[in-house]
Image (tube, rainbow, N blue to C red; front, side, top):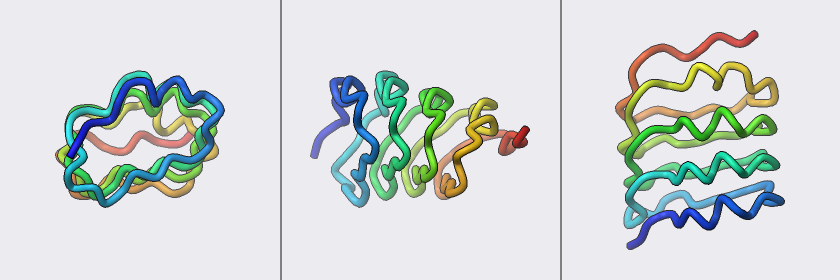
Amino acid sequence: DGTLISELGYLTSLTQLHLWGNKGLHGTIPDTFGRLVNLHTLYLDKNNLEGGIGFVVSLKKLKHLDLSENKLRGQIPHGLGGISTLYDLRLSQNHFSGALPPRP
């Protein structure tokens, strides 16, 4: 059991973060995750995370993003379509609204 601590967002050299399959992991994804500008892989799937995902628009080097099977909600950020490196996107089994933004 636990939450994602905001201090993880200060590990700005981090390129991969794999915290999937921890049903005891709950709460929101801290906004400080938007500082992980070198991240190319983020796996937070199969947890009990809640809230929005606005932080992802800052992660311009993302290639793999899996946030599936959580309790996330809200609009899918329009800036997500502007991450040109992103080719593996998984958002299923959440409570998002709106459409996926187009790629430029």
